[in-house]
Image 1 (cartoon, one colour):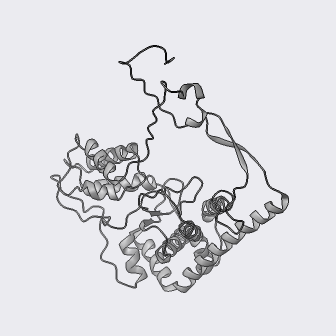
Image 2 (cartoon, rainbow, N blue to C red; image 1 turned 30 degrees about the vertical axis):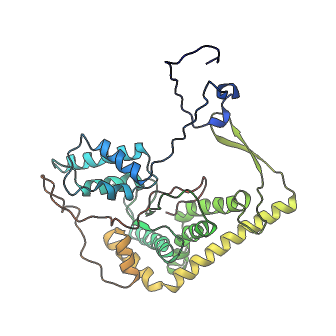
Length: 353
C-alpha cells in the first residue's frame, strides 16, 4: 500500500461507519481509493435478501416475499434475518412443519414494535388512558395529508412503551417541510387526546414531546425551515471514533438565540393546534377507535379507516386460528398497499408512538 510495489493479486477491503475520521494518508491514490457506500436495501433488495434467508426454512405456499419486502422499508439485512428467525421460532412453538405468512407477520411486528410484555398487568384506567393516547396519534396521522400510512395501533405493552402506533413509510431519502410538520402534529396527537377526552395529562407523552422538540430545533438550526431563513446555527464537536456529540459552539448572538427559541416555540404551537383541531373535530371517531382498542387491543390500518368512517368492524380474528401443520391459507394481517416501516427519519427526528 505504499504505492511503490505492485501487488496485483492482493485486494484489501475495509469497512467503517466513520469515514470522516480516517487518516488522509489512507485515502491517497493506490490505497483505499475506492469507496462503496452500503446503505439500507430497497424493496427489491429486501425481497432478494429474504429469498436468501428462507432457503433453509420450509415456508408455506401462502408466504408472499414481495408483500413482506414492501412492508419492511427501513429494515437492514440483519433485521430481515431476525424476522425470518423469529417467524421460524413462532412456527416451531405452534408445532407447525412450515412457516406461514401469519408467522412472518407476527415476527415483523416483533421486530418493528418489540416483544409483547404479556406479563405486565395494567389497570383499567391505564388501559383507557393508553387507548385514547394511541387513538390520538392514529387519528391525526390518518387525517393529515402528508403523513405516512399507519401499520398498526396496539395497547399491548411492548418494550418500554404501554402502547405503540406504528407507521410504515416508503423508501424515503428526502424529507419535506410539510412531512416534518405532519410528524410534529402526530407526536402531539396523544397528549391532545388525553387533555380533551380525559381532562388530564400523563407521563406517556414524555418521549413524544422530547422527540418533537428536538425535531423542531433541527428544523430551525439545521434544515433552514423557519422564518430565520436558510441558515444553520451552532457548530458541533464530536468525539472521534464514537460519533457522539460532546459540545456545541454557539456561533450566534443572544438576540439570534432568542429568535431561535421563538421559532421552535412557533413550530411546536402550530403542530399542537393542528393536532388539537383534528382531534376535537372528530370526537366520535376518537371514541370508536379507543373503544376498539380496549376491546381488541390491536387494530390495523384498515380497521382504523373503518372506525373513522363509522363502519362496523368484522369479527375479531383469533390468534388461535392459525394454519394447519401442512401450511394452509391464513387471512393476511397486513394489506400489500400503503405500508411503511419503523421510522427512518433524519437523525433526531421523532418516531410517533
